[in-house]
Length: 571
Picture (cartoon, rainbow, N blue to C red):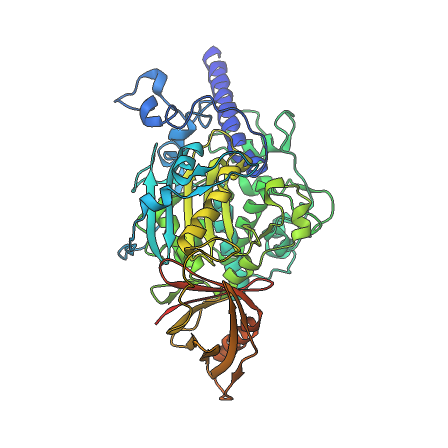
């Protein structure tokens, strides 16, 4: 009997330890964009896991062991090792890359130039360089894509080219991307109540909310993430999510889906943005029920196996194998860059359509800014949230997937740039690294475009004239293969080109980098509806163009008032 009591005590101890870990992981939702900075006990060099020696040796020394059941398993500085090692310590489900060869990434490395890019952190102070920001943000790896080519790549800490890193709440954006894809294809009705897709949620906070409200996290729900309160909902969620066996006497929900049924409504749906982990896992259930596939399998079939990934990715899972749709994804840095490039290109990889262009366009347009403002993110004023992506609404149309401790996929359409960063910052909330991250991304974008954001660059006028530009993207929706979409800016102010189906003729006016395009006339040939729809979008956008920029790789970006960008390259 004594041994049995000891066993029960041990199980409860392990269960509590793992629950504490899951509170850290699940609770990152509340901290993901919060502002609770603390002083880091060690800098990036001092906390490097290779220097500290975690888990080296066979077996490693006891004081260097990291166990899943340790209460500080994911606390700084151990987290700097753990972020790259989840598959070694927890149950997972793979996201297969498919049988084909990896798609090579073209390279045009400019490490020295980008390392020297300087910016002023948010809040003022002295300038900082991109190279200095690498360590200031406890970066484990960062890659910069420009014009579809790798121009910068650097690793540190636990990560190398083949290593996989937890992306934290960037996972939500992958889940949201799948949801937006299903909506665009008609496989999921965004206006349907959640109970119509998942009847088990009928009595929960999600039951009478719409799928769209889940995608935009505007659900009125009662769900506390107050870690000082031992009765807070986050503790029950963590206990349900733990993959360890439940101890004797545990009578709570088992698994993500079981917990979601217990979340109760509070407040009005659609009124305010509320960043809660449970929304992403609810969307994961909606997707699974709508398609008959888990988010892991659907992500593999629809995206991961089609972008030319180098490695199989993976999700951590609960005790019944449900993927953690809100924060459990791990992948290589280069493969996340491939994903970001596919989204930037507007659906295409090597001429193949991967996802509907409409899904990407909806994300880029952003969500309800007024609802977002009610959440009080001081460093993200003017932003919005749509499809579980963060949309800046800046003059470049930048948008991002964001995760705690510094995970980012940052896409700048005007600069034709993708930045993916993995990090292990000691402070979970991105408010701790945003001041030295967001302006750094903007500075690199301006550097790659060869000018200064919002004004004319020094030196001669960029060569807008003198040749034909082939249009590659219209407002984030790509272009139809073989469509005759092009623009030629004559030296006399004349504009000509192909509108898609018909020829266009018009005029334009330059003032530095400011560009005004007059109404264009077109021929009147009838074409298939898809071509005519693309032509109408181009002709609607052209008169609203207000500025242009030409990147170092020769990509032309025409930016329109009110949002929308036309991307083109020399023929």
